Image 1 (cartoon, rainbow, N blue to C red):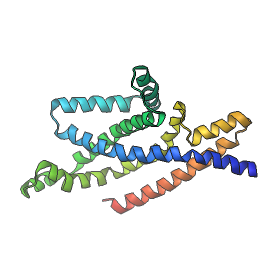
Image 2 (spheres, one colour; image 1 turned 135 degrees about the vertical axis):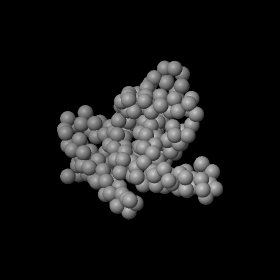
Image 3 (cartoon, rainbow, N blue to C red; image 1 turned 45 degrees about the vertical axis):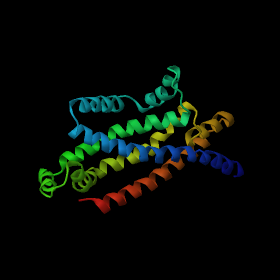
Image 4 (tube, helix red, strand yellow; image 1 turned 90 degrees about the vertical axis):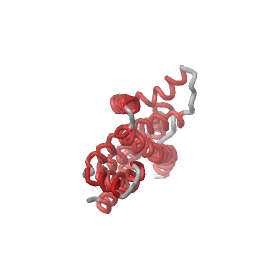
Length: 211
C-alpha cells in the first residue's frame, strides 16, 4: 500500500507541468484566436493569406511533430528554447489556429443586422466587434471552444517526448524501473479525474451562456 501511495505522489508531482502547460496555453491561445479571426474577416489580402497559411500549417500537421520541431528543429537552427518554452510555443500556436477558425465561424454566424446596428449607433468597427459581435460569436462558438479545452488537458501528455516531467513521463519512469503497469493505470485514473472535472465545468459554462 505504501508503495502505491509513493507511486501516486511521484506521478502526481508531474501535474505541475501538466497544469502549467494547460493554463498557459489557454491564456495565450485565446487572444491569438480572437486576433486571427478578426484578421481573417477584416484584414487586407496579405494578412488573410498569411493567416490562411498559419491555420493550414498548424491544423494540418500533428501537434506532436510541432512540439518536436519547436524544441529539436529550431535548436538545430540555433534558436534554442527550454523544453517548457518550446512546448508552450507549439501548443499556443496550434490551439490558436483552431480557435481562430472556431471564432471566425462564430462571427460569421452572427446576424448581419447586428453589424448594421452598431454602425447606426455610431460605433467604430472595433468597438462594435468588442461590445456587440464578439460576445455573441463566442457564445455561439462555446461548445466547440469547450471541446478544445477538454482536448488540451489530454494533449498535454505529449510534452513527455521532449523530456518534461509531466504525469505521463513520471509514470513511464516507474514502469521502466519497476516493470509494472500499475503506474500507467494510476496515470489513466488521474487523467480521467482531471478530464471529468473540466468536462463538468465546461457543461456548466455552456448551460449558463447558451442561447
